[in-house]
Length: 104
Image (cartoon, rainbow, N blue to C red; front, side):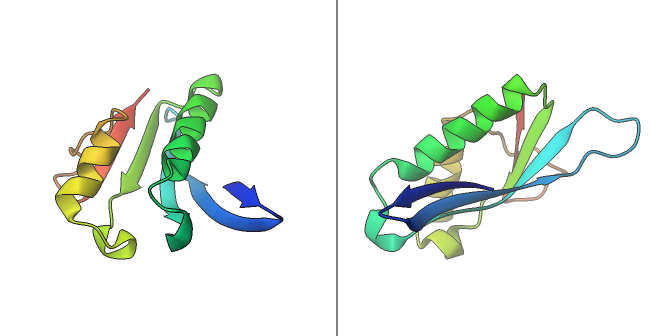
């Protein structure tokens, strides 16, 4: 988990899970990326996502996956997916509509 803290209060965090299987290249999944509503639209989520991507590259992680869940973020699905697309995520994970992948 990577968190952003303000005055000792966690206002944003990302949960990562190692999904690497035996004899396979390293794969991690972003299980959750949340920013408290009062702190949204301040690029905090973007900075956390960028840090996770940097972290993954430094550790030779081959792939990051995520589930783009617009309902949780209270924004249109297309907008959420376009945000992730700007960071290189593409929608090709097993043909599922809201799953995205970033090959590193």
